[in-house]
View 1 (cartoon, rainbow, N blue to C red):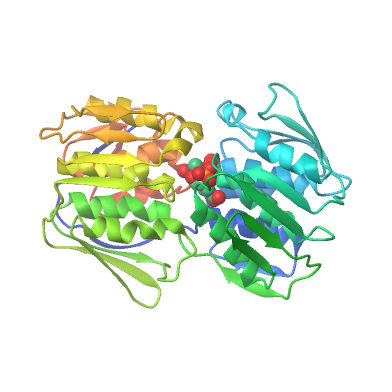
View 2 (view 1 turned 60 degrees about the vertical axis):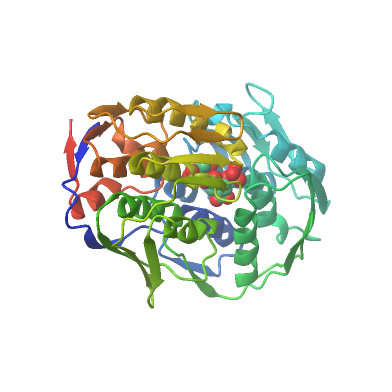
Length: 407
Ligand SMILES: O=C(O)C1=C[C@@H](OP(=O)(O)O)[C@@H](O)[C@H](O)C1
Ligand SMILES: C=C(OP(=O)(O)O)C(=O)O
């Protein structure tokens, strides 16, 4: 399904309820599998969470987790540490290109039995669950924080807990902190100091409900909409000031574009009534990699340039996001340069109309480019990709006045 999008740029006033954070949901579901006394509310209805939830009870056979990176990494650690389990974990063709060796090597240090079925270092992998006896690992920390979160999630279920030595610079650190905060919520003793994470063993946790906050990465598209519209008042439900999600740090970034964000009891309000914008934007996004596409497209739409760095993890996500961004931004008339870890967009005064945006099986390519319809009509190809994290995205855009025509 492709969608043709346009917007008259009036009436950006609405209240929207975005589904729960997929990062929080997928962590919480692993913890719930380890500690059944845990209850959850506002669980994400994304594909990535549904697939993780569905396969958590698998004991044998082949488990296909499609495009879901966190599910792949978290389940690898989970199954490897469950004695008696014998599963093959596989995924989409892109998932089979996303590296998992660092996590597998760390799990092997703990006593895991895991083998590669095709290419060394990549899914599919065969896991024979074991009772781990060791309690200390080292892992390189600059490729993906998901490996570290995967280890942290099973840490307290091991007989002696777990200490994780992080080697080198730590990328996507807020996601590690999110995992840590979740452990703390369930009264699991855990620390993250410098290059060392330590987790104390815990057999049981007290019955407690964890309320998942709505997804801040998904909220980013509304920040972009507010920035690109003339005026906006968008209320997003189920957000809080003390968020566990690092992408909530989008607030000061979009303040530069005149978006004032305020919190009420259980919502955020994005308010735009001035047309403020910086001459250009310079950001290091290594702590917020999932915002890179949103921000690059906002800058394109506002006719300003940007220099985004800290983007080395983008090459191994749902697609090579640096290449995908360059290809699609340039279709609109932009000039873009990329390296292995940065993107530079030159200010582009006039946008080409009726461009067809390819999405490369990447939900964020679809959602990041959609707000540009406030400036020029465009088509998003393979628009169903949004279900990876935010299945109601197109309906919600319609509710704020976008014309979303299936073609
Ligand atoms: O732990 C998580 O929930 C995530 C960590 C990040 O990945 P990396 O650590 O690979 O950058 C992020 O991009 C992804 O969308 C979700
Ligand atoms: C990178 C992402 O997800 P994952 O790595 O879990 O597939 C994302 O949602 O942007």
